[in-house]
Image (cartoon, rainbow, N blue to C red; front, side):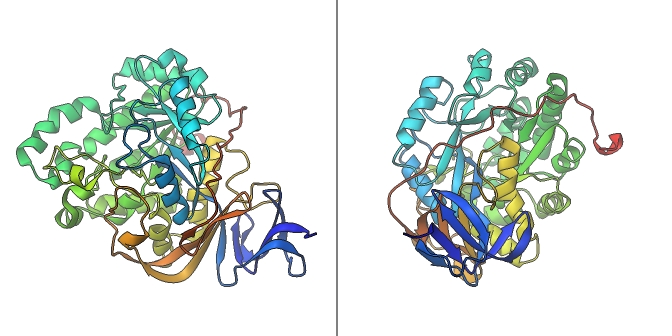
Length: 457
């Protein structure tokens, strides 16, 4: 009988202990040892010489569109795209049809995922004016990763925009709450600019930097009073990054690979409405400030904001065209290319897509290469040169603004609980994804002390 179920041999581990050569031995779905297992036996052995081994990568913002939007994406196709891109777990968003706002809707998604999702998963519940009193109970249900709050209208019907309602949501529960922060009043006031312009680059004028900053300031002020930690999604502007750097005791920060890679006006000239997302891709000065936030540690996680629409929908004249683009499968290839370009280290990337999500949201058994943790491993080849091709993409929408983009660095295998689910671009076996588990005992609520640096923290 073999000593282990799996040994990943000869690779370079990227862990909290640093970067160095080590084998990973797996038994019963968990990491049983890290070190030299050259003489040990295993039912399966993977030769990882020349490759880097990361903890399983986690994408904390995806929209897989099921139920109600299956022509764009569903839980099977979205999770297939995830594992092809080296992603082992996802947090899926609530703006489906019907929206995930009740225990029954959450249970329905979990049932749909069973036996169909290739990666580990959890689902956000959406805050609405009608379910605020239930949110504290909803966020504790198995398979729920927390509450999602839309302060500005985006895709779907979920919206809680007034200060009084936002404050009530923040008082309803204790887990970190994920927020789309754009100011609804300003969006409504400025929408005629987009209608009059009728070209995609006007998205920057409609959903301008002030709309994002105004909502973020309101959110932080209300969170201070409520004593609730918040997670600001897809931060896109220099002013937001500057502001949020002063409030790390209250607000965690997400950026997307799209905002770190694309810039206006070039992206709108090249891709038109296919570059349209909320909040918008902004000019290079904003992109540079986001990268500064990555380097300085202000940014906590990367999320793809995978939000597919059909080609026909995206081809509608602006601003009738919907916002959003696919991204779960291209997150790691794009970011590994940035690693090779020297924009961030591999250890920093590991924290942004592995350790950071687990730490922020209290994931159990994920985010580390450590004995006793789930054997979720993302295997990457830092030297591989590839071109992102349409034929490689698994998303039902069938397009990406990054098609024909050349990158250096590529995910070559995805391992979940010791089972190889993707290797060399081929999805293997059956869909084994399970609901993620979260800590029941969470950090105490904050007291709103303000600038951590000013307090000597």
